[in-house]
Length: 253
Image (cartoon, rainbow, N blue to C red):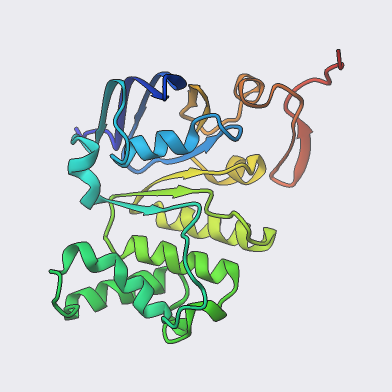
């Protein structure tokens, strides 16, 4: 029996004694595609940083593929919400993607033929191999996001974490990206934070809603309880092209 991709048990975390996450528990199987919803400040990115080993919980345990997060970081890929990338810097798509191999290449050594082969495969999976010689600053926002995903894929991850992967991109690219991630999910476990309830409802296998605590639905259904916990108001959701209301109309007080 395979170990879970993610196993969180009773995790608490605070910033300067201000609680951010409380008693979070979650078990995610390998091969899943988890969409994480929740309001700004609800703890989504903090949870992701805990899973990546960038933060340590105040209480509770986290295991990634059976290991402590810090020990498993060579087995995961990460696409942050803000890449802080200077688009005026003269660097090509290929060079950016090759950065994903740095952890596997010794400092001061040239990239190996295997490194370049892995990056070529990652760029092809991301659909941007033909742009490999282009300066990254000349790409559209959606194309650049694919480069950063390719960089993460170049690490050959077993789990891919994405924090708001469609921020600042057009709606058409957003749908294309999630279609691409669903295809990638055939081989890689994916965890993606997003505010787009409609896109999540079409593409993911399971859903978690985070607002200090966590509600998990392993069948990918966005429930009234989840939306009520996160947003405290009615939400119009476009699912499979059909708009419907998740919560009943509420009155102002």
